[in-house]
Amino acid sequence: MADFFNSVKEVITQNPTNLKKPHIYKAESDNKKQMEQLKELYKTAPESVKPQIERDMKMLSYGIAGEDNVMFELNDSYLPIIVLHDLNIKYDDLSAQIDYLIITKKVFLIVECKNLIGNIEVNSNGDFIRTTEYKGKYKKEGIYSPITQNNRHLEMIKKVRVSSKSNFITKVIVEKYFNDTYKSVVVLANPKTVINMKYAKKEIKEQIIRCDQLISYIKKLTKESKEPVFTEKQMYEFADFFNKLHTTNSVDYTKKYICDDIIKSEDESKTDTSNIEETQIYKELRQLRYDISKLEGVKPYFIYNNSQMESLISAMPENLDDIKKISGFGEVKCKKYGDEILKVINKYR
Image 1 (cartoon, helix red, strand yellow):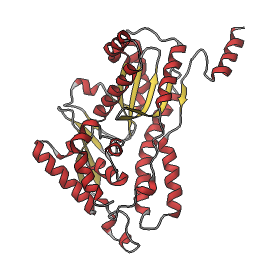
Image 2 (tube, one colour; image 1 turned 180 degrees about the vertical axis):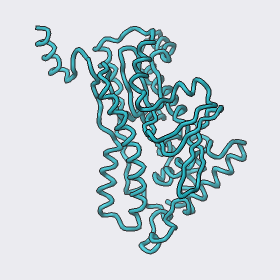
Image 3 (tube, one colour; image 1 turned 120 degrees about the horizontal axis):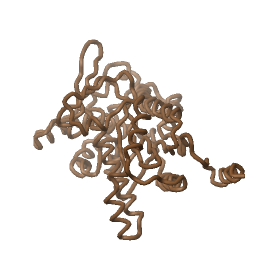
């Protein structure tokens, strides 16, 4: 009889009962939708634009492959968890793109998936430095810390959860115990990536794992948690709450290739000038970064790294809100540098 009622409940709620294995509550990915959009655009694009579209598809493919690796591990785990993939959440002027939100019986886990190319070093200051090799030449650059990125996601989720409570006392309780319930981890999805954390601090090391360590990490986190166990009903209520916050992160790719330094004529596209690093907008953004770093006495990649600079050129943001959609540009960074960045970009719009 119990099985009968459970079956009826599953039909009504569209959710499984007696959760014994992962339920992928939200599976779709904006990245995959964007990849399909790019493939369609590529079919009719002029030859001068195709190299840039190919580059965007390649970058997207890295992210998709990394997220697929994480999904494989989760699906194969047989853990009683609820998984939400690719959440794009906005709150006031803030936004966050969360690769995976995993709801366990005791904790929420925010997963930042990184399919990084090259070798990564994390120094004693928590800086992430990547070394890549191409044709015998090695290139070293700083990259935006995925741990910082994940911490920003946690802070935003805290604001959302606190604001959702109408009672003052409940707000205080949620804020006070938030860090006990919500955790974050960076998952390196590329098995070829070598990461050196010899000099990294302990709290940094504990927040970075490889993809094949994710399931044991979740088990350990749940076992060590002293928080009360969520009921299955509560778990789905949380899943509903976060899923309703999601908004589609759409990109209009027809606007992305209007920069004169990226869209080249047929003849120009056959030369090396199609390299984004040789474009004038790239050089100006790099010079701006250098000038600001000198004034602030920090390393240039602390302002924005090469990958973020290329994302700026690809997206051609029109305002500060557009800049915030680019990974690595939060509220503080946009407020400090956003107007100067837009001045450069607007010259090439």
